[in-house]
Length: 300
Ligand code: NAD
Figure 1: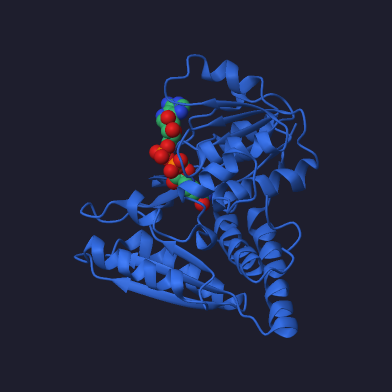
Figure 2 (figure 1 turned 45 degrees about the vertical axis):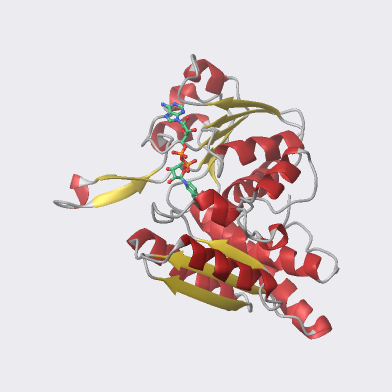
């Protein structure tokens, strides 16, 4: 079998198009423009690229983008004061504080100071609790993107055996909650799981979120399974020239694609969906703030 490739780039474009339509309708019918504020502390190069991309795509979707770039020496107190100001600003419907924060700042304290209704990353403890109890919440962007791709690929997920590899707060745990919400039988595997190969072999759906290049070989995959590879790992690529690198996922794509029914590539799979879902969450937050119907198909 050769797996169908789930094109995250194309799907993300479709989601961004739906968001842009929703934004245009909000403007035309209600005179409201959704706004996303992104806060970056310090000059971490990867974070700077993320923030730039988020700002550009926010504007492309017709939303307002507010970027706050703070010096690495910014105090926790000053950052909390900025979050408070954004919480109170009616033009801001979504707030994202780019992680990681410098060591002298307590990330949990900052994240939990964001108004949960504006917490478009879905990391606030209230949103974690709402998701865990199956209530309406803001859903973390990367797992939401994975869920959208799974629904698009498989239709109903009800009754499927799903294995999530990784138990982080930003990917693994919320992913498992979302799959449970769609009535999968969910196993969360992690670094202490005894028989990872056997566990993965039983799964109709595999979501790998570990951060170890090519750790899931094709012979762990059940024939016909749907494989979502969240991992982003940079490895040496001598075939491209001396000192060159390339990105690979947590799944050994070549061997897994021989067995799986469908699979996301890296790059071009889950990655592009994350920012698309951030925009979707901002639109959702704006609709909720204004007591308007939420956009269809853009939430969990
Ligand atoms: P993390 O380091 O917080 O968590 C990794 C998890 O993997 C841990 O729960 C750990 O128990 C588990 N693990 C480690 N070694 C293992 C092993 N040998 N077997 C089984 N499980 C093992 O990482 P994270 O933030 O969840 O990110 C995971 C990966 O996803 C990273 O590569 C990251 O870059 C990527 N990521 C991608 C996106 C995206 O937009 N595509 C977003 C977030 C994270």
